[in-house]
Length: 329
Ligand code: HEM
Image (cartoon, rainbow, N blue to C red):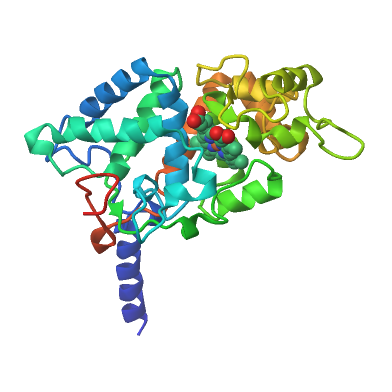
């Protein structure tokens, strides 16, 4: 009896020690080594060309990756176009501000990969978005890191599945923390990933509540630096054209760096969800630490974005490799 129990314990132990960590599914570096060994270089050169044409592609691609992963996992479901009988994720109101250059970056990188006969229809759109995100971060001066690959493309994309899965800019710390926790990410991961707001643009409507009619006693959000508030009011006058956008990091708008945290220390976070990371004393210590140390921030960001890339990964019959990233096969 004792021996039998010991044997089954051993079998269980072996099974546990051989299984990959739960959330990373079958992801691994160099996943395409046999079928498309040069894939990372091909994607990098397509992305480099796109970014040279327009810097807008940087923020657009990074945000696209985040919005993909938080809704149905990192499966390129956000890239699917709506059809007559399906309103896709990209047409949910929160996704309407995703800039077209992010989608275009993926479409172009996919075309470059598929132009190599050996690679044709072998690399998923979800992995291309993951690589393109890494490349835009590196191209704007952020950390360069090894990406895990092996995601399949999802088989469904609906606007209704987006509701409640992406954070609005009005969220407080508890709301942010619990939404990230639902995706297996810690509060520290959330604080690290929020620094993606060190590059890119925001439409005026995403923060206008902070600069006009904030509350009965305070026309402007008191946690917003008054000089910065004045700048934002002049860039975004009342009734501004809804297409007008401002840079999210006014100090180093084109550099992926830890300036984001130094901005928060000066009450220059653009959204409530940014500034709350400093005003809330529970998250302030990490803001201060990363404001002071670029290497510590970079390490935390690499950890967090690698975890983000593992969210809801599709395997086996849950997905496939799309021929056209915007259309199901
Ligand atoms: C923590 C909660 C977050 C909230 C509430 C939030 C909210 C927003 C909002 C409202 C915008 C501006 C949209 C517009 O008006 O055009 C934006 C832009 C952006 N977000 Fe976030 N975000 C969050 C986290 C993240 C994360 C985790 C990433 C990526 C790792 C990210 C990357 C970006 C980027 C790069 C942009 C600029 C987009 C562009 O230039 O086109 N955000 N975000």
